[in-house]
Length: 162
Image (cartoon, rainbow, N blue to C red):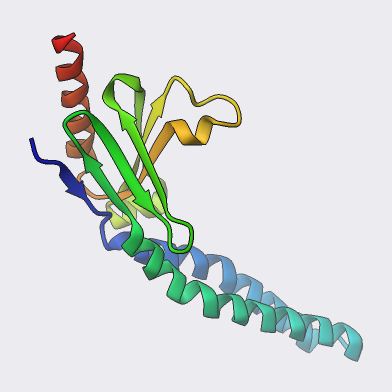
């Protein structure tokens, strides 16, 4: 059986940009207001430096978001699910079906607006410092119910063959 390759929906990039904008715009507006309201030149300089740092961060965030998005890939194989991610540090996570204990679908208000969701596949080994290695988070999935059903169907097949 051939693996089902799943890429996140393009709306995930838009969601990340909206989240960054919702964070940075109020910070920039507040910073600019303080620059104009303060009379002490030293205090003004602190906020000018702060807004400069914010703009520098934006220069790194804007190209990083599409690069990280392109790195995301998930596979539903015959015996496991796997996920790849990372721009600079590549990460691959593989979880055999027999270790999956729970599949959560989460969807915040902005995700609902963009019609995407996250699928979190957990194993019994998620406690402690090694916990992050024993789970897979699939970001920005549009057909989340279909993907969840595909994973659960493989789990059912594995349990009936034992």
